Image (cartoon, rainbow, N blue to C red):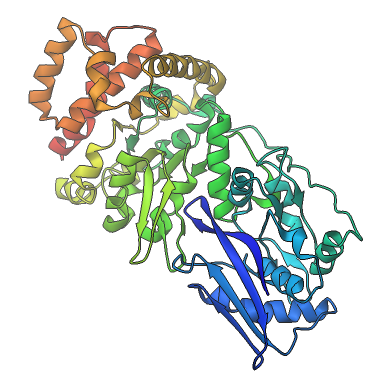
Length: 509
């Protein structure tokens, strides 16, 4: 007799259906797991054996074969423990076999029979809803799975004995409730930044259009302070964005207690991060920092200190909005539509004044800035020189505008963009930074004066095709902040000023 139990295998944030087929047949005692399992899955034999003994059951002295179908799909992770154990229990008559029909099961077993939490419970719950299944998952993952659908039947046991009693009707387990978000404090406010009015304006434009931004200035100028305040200018996550962010965090094992938040992610990896940590991958592929920053902000401080390989790996995700990890036997793609905020010093010495003044001459700045490749720099829309803050700026009264005031303007500009793209029938495009190039002639057409300025500036600055289109997108965002339908000379002039900043810095060096 063969018992079938449904579970899932993860490919990116997608949960693919897997059938656990358990057969107990006459023959020499053996316990084999087949179907392209990894080390964690093959080790399930010992965990299942010990958990069954701790629950008062013993494996029969027969030949046990567990097949994970489809057999050509790699199986990774410890969440196959529970479906294998329940399949075995059904095969020996410890639980009714029909109780496992139409149920997706996942969970890791401890040696004493308790069920430990696993990563990826939310995508598994979403897949169960799509298949019309119920869900059995660890008790710790119940609040996370409950967010998938109010109609999803969920059983979240604490131990193997508890789920056996539930399936036999001896004990009834209540459906878990969705995890409530923790009380979070106020976000850093833009009002705390003294001076730097030009940088604040650039930050507002970046927030309104979803543009990437590079802040270049000496130590202590407030670059990190400005970057940390960008999330306070962004609107909350929509329902679809929230689900995408939660599924990625679930796969990464960072959705503790199922507590969701509508705040946009803000990830700030250290410059020693490897390419696998930044983009994703490893022996067991996991989401990297750019996937965890999906629908949010990725802040790279000390940009030239990152490895060249890691930085160049960002080029494709910045264009496509996904991180692709290719292996010989499979391919994984994680959503990675993030907003890049980068900060750097003019040179390794600091490039400021007094103690941070560079004593090595212009060559120091040129060599330091050359660590950033031209193709990556071309993908950054706004490049800004941030000057040092003077004592007069620090002693001046706080700015009148706080983050809430700027965020209201940003939200209004984003509403204009969303309405424009919805009228054009573009789904999934909400901000100007993600607008298709083919539509720029329609949505970002300059007037006569602006067109002349753009033509002259494109020749003087030697703009690439990508740079030309990104100037138009930034100008469109500036016009949206002003409530203007037509791109004027003033909008293009400001967009070109942000694009020309690094060029002037390089010439000065």
